[in-house]
Image (tube, rainbow, N blue to C red; front, side, top):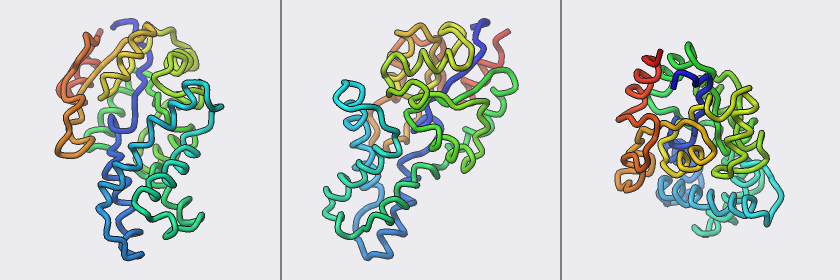
Length: 238
């Protein structure tokens, strides 16, 4: 671990609470329209289209488009599932789509990132676009040194080039780059590319009934009970 120069982070779920953020954005909109639907269930439905929409690009069945576009398309699908599409005009859908730029950081995120930034280059390696990540950073006070990820690679995780091109953009080889995520599948892909890996759980990402990613399932370079504990370990490396 002494050779690590840069730490790249998954963002949605790992550093920010997408479920609460999307629900909070939908709640007043639904209330104003008299829509009696649980905003958290709607957030889950919207997020449920996330992987299928990206898979069409990863598989080569569609050219790369930003996650902002996919989110808007996925919003249409989610609204249709709840029979709400006619309740929203195009402008209202665009406005609701900005919810992904205003997701609250988990309570420990900002302090831990600031601590790690004193020693390492830090950057998001997210499927979010550069535009989305920049606005989310301003909203949540996430002080990145750079923004890498899907827009750099023109592909979506867990495609190998997303990790490799992100490391290269920071002037690092894979072994000098640590991928941090609360998702074991993300780390599986990063490790296969030669990146160092670190896991900690976010047991409330999917709500009180979460059953996945509650513990490490791989032999990651670091595995901690929390982001603060992980940060302490990384800062202790000589």
